[in-house]
Length: 76
Image (tube, rainbow, N blue to C red; front, side, top):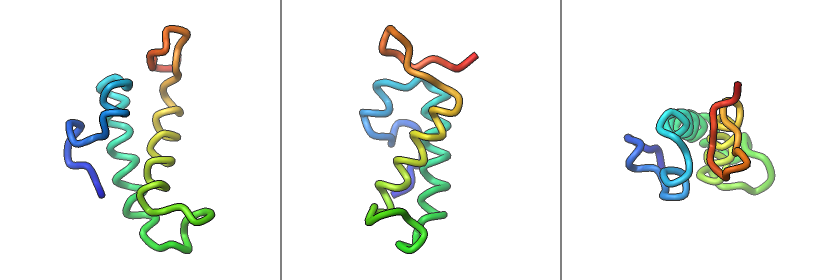
C-alpha cells in the first residue's frame, strides 16, 4: 500500500536510510505500486508490494551506497 509520509515507511527503511534516501524510497515505492498493479507486469510470482519494495531499494541504490561504517551515504 502506498506511503503518504516518511514516517509511514517500514522501520527497516526509517532506521537505516538518511532523510533524502527515505524520500526517494517513498516516491519510488508509490510509483511502482501504481505501475505494477497488474500481475502480468511483474517478474516471477512477486506480489505487488514485493515488486514495489524491490523497485524502491533499486532507486535508493542509484544515489546511495552502504559504507564501511554500515551507514548509507550519498554517492559522489
